[in-house]
Length: 393
Image 1 (tube, helix red, strand yellow):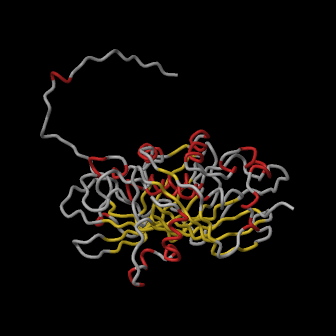
Image 2 (spheres, one colour):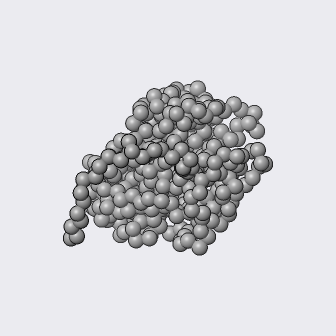
Image 3 (cartoon, rainbow, N blue to C red):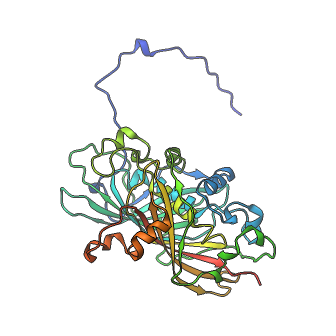
């Protein structure tokens, strides 16, 4: 091991004049004109997820599935260790891409084709990279839309998550433009149009039955059923450190000087990073829906329809769209459950259902053409698909 001499250093600042002609102001993020279709961005930074961080995320975001909390439970089902929550993987993948993809965004327009492809375990290291699928311009003075596909990869360069996102971004219009490294069309990007899920040989243990609720096995779910999740979650200023803990660099979420300088509905207090809202909402549903889930297949057609700030209380509703018995497709007796998921704020879920009825389940973007008003208390909508164990015989 090398030994390096290092003498104490002396103070210099009082004797060195400030050179006001040599000021550097770094600008992060990209404006619309900086995106080109086909470019690939290998996002900076990598995250090694240790066990404490994984379990803290699962508990803070209220996930009840023992796969994310108990190593013996996960191992008894065939996994090599407890699993990292899919929403933690998603949050890290998206957050690592913010500096290249959305740090200059006007709005996040939606999540599409979110597919979890491999287990992520404590000790795994995640990186993220994105490919620009399309850039849509609406005019020089109007924001355009950037459509990206993102891959999250582990330390073995295996893709553990693939998803797409659409982002509304403006032209720079004279504002300072960053000089970050441009995208590389030749960068390694093992995307799959029809991704394959790689799971271990799953098992169905005879014990551990008492660790989950009887009403969350596959047989419990019927098409058309609406689950009004009992509790809400008040978001506090905890969201500020969690934004950076998962790697998100957008100042809108933690810099009040920045957020208060924005005009319109996004201005004022820092906005809670949407991925965290997503995770809290899904956690609220887990005791009713996903406690006996064996794999999260993914999400699609999802939108944040309203922002949230510290002090908001979020609630959730799930609607069962379809159920399909898939036998031993995944190695154990299970079925697939397709769900329409709704997030709300500052209203109890049962009160929202009484107040708005079926309008809750109409896409907010479709309301205008249907002659209906948007629901200000509705903050999120997405579809999800789960693999859920059958009830033990």
